[in-house]
Length: 105
Image (cartoon, rainbow, N blue to C red; front, side, top):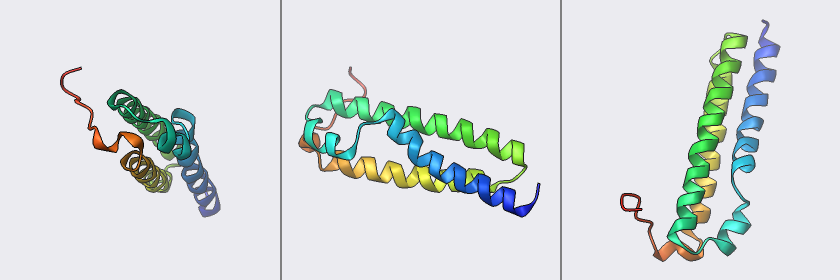
């Protein structure tokens, strides 16, 4: 595998990182408008976990195929950026005053 293939696959993983979160989660406008209960916040966080697991599995398999750590690194950067965006949206949602009780329900 040459260096240009590594770059292409790394860019692909960064873009797929963005798409993974949008596949499992609603838009930030939807979160800012309609997430008004702790149960809905919990659902968004469950989507974050699913998207993160999916991205980790996909980027690991690509990194193994191309024998490079760069797809993992680029996917991690994109995933962290998306987690930041979704957490910011949750923080500014109508449910911001109500923190969900993760241990009793």
